[in-house]
Image 1 (cartoon, helix red, strand yellow):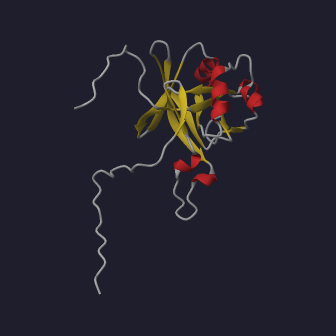
Image 2: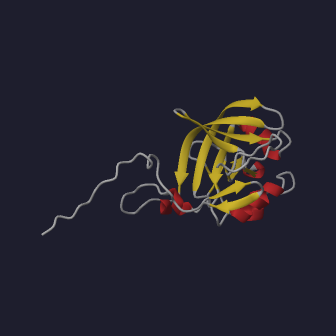
Image 3: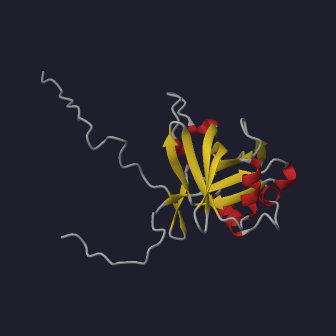
Length: 198
C-alpha cells in the first residue's frame, strides 16, 4: 500500500534546487553577487536558462540595465560564501571584496565570472517576465567555462561530479549524493559476459 498523503498549502515545494551565485555588473565598482535557488533550464536549442529575482534586490536593476548575468555553480567549498552572499545586500557590501572572490571578465559578456566557481554560465537576457513576487529573467547561454580539474585526464570528458556541487532543499544546503545510474540506465541492455569453459 502506498503511504498516506498529507495535504499542504500551495507553495514552492519543488526540491532540491540548484544553489548558484549570480554575478552581474559592467564596472568593478558595481560588480555584485546574488545567491539564487530559483534557477533552472528552459531549452536546449537555443540554450536558455532562467533566474527569478525580486525587483527589490540590488542586483535586479543591474541585470535589467546591462542585460547580462553569469550563473556560477557552487561547490562544497564555496557553500559558506554563497550563503553569506544570500543574506547580505550589495547596497551595503561589495561582495567580491568582502569574500575575496576573484572577478574575471566573461568571454562573451561584460559581467564578471567568479574564478573560484567550478562552472560559469554566461548569459544574455532575452526577456524579462513579471510573475508576482519575482520577475523571470530568461537568459540565452552564450558561453560556458569550467575548471580544467573537472575533465577526465584520459578521456577529456567533463565529469561534473568532480565539482562537489551543492543543492538547496527546504532551507538547507546538501551535498550531492552517490551516482545511482545514468540517463537511460533503466532500459539499457545488459551484456552477458560468459567465460568459455576449457
